[in-house]
Image (cartoon, rainbow, N blue to C red; front, side):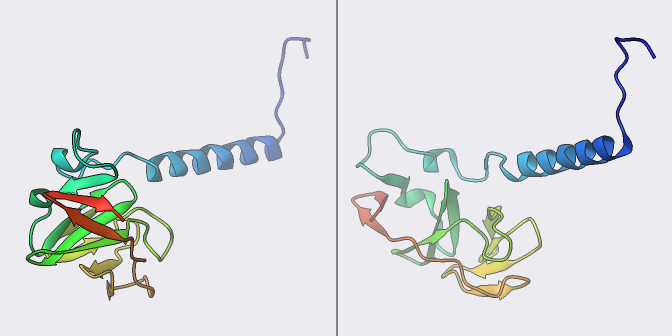
Length: 139
């Protein structure tokens, strides 16, 4: 063996491969969410704490803005919820067909945060929001 040769034992290779896989999984889970409408991403010129414009949140639907899901179950009734799934801590992926959907394990939540389909068993925690003019702001 020459002085420039590097040798790895089996344990080092296995541990290194495991760390690489864990890092790749964390990187995939921490990706940027592009599912919210452009107007829902930190609007400029609105009140302090503005999350979205009321027009960006459809009746019977919702948008995901950072760590908050904003829904409008009925006209003029806006609900703020955590965007972190209560099953395994993944970020929910979208709001469609009247449910908030988690891409990791298939949990679904109602527009009020209640569990509509598992494996989650706990509702999404609420996050206070209020309407100021045509803006939805963190309360």
